[in-house]
Length: 107
Length: 122
Image (cartoon, rainbow over all chains, first blue to last red; front, side):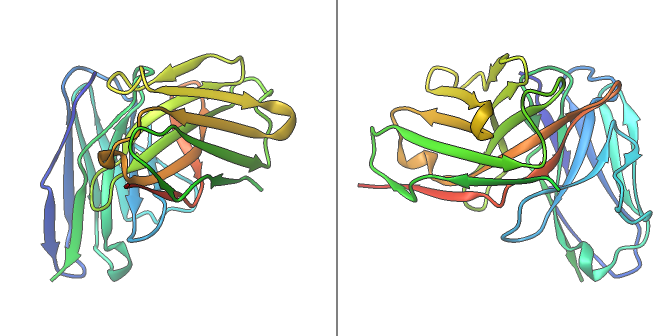
């Protein structure tokens, strides 16, 4: 199976800060990389698909980049409502795998 | 509008078989390209993909759990059923069903159910 490794596992930042989360795949997955946001007690929500495409309705402060094995999710200006855990997920093959998650908190 | 809802027992005993049903609306699993998947999340832990079934009845399973999982669909009822045998306390988790959207360049989950918590305990 393709292993997905996120870093950091958690971070704390101030409102307005630029936040970057990275995701590394154990082999090339082209651009078959999705990012999800999960708030406590809620189902995950799709933010970014195909590495860099913004899902409809998602604020433009979220962006994704990368291809191959290295990917990045960026929040350009952290807002209080962005407090959540973020997961990357590869759909390169039919044995999907998720990263271990990055918990984002406000300082 | 697309909705999915999981149903099944909240509590199962070790060694029992878990049967979960996903009832959905707003799309048909007989439509080319449609897929439904199951994902679980132990309390405080990460998401884990379990299984997927496609409109053409192709089925895919987690490598580590494939000997214990069976996924099936009833297109006429708009339902997908997941069974997991030989349940263990480590299988305690919230189980989600979700719809997969396939495009020319991406495969993604665009709609999720609310999830159902299954506790494995004697």
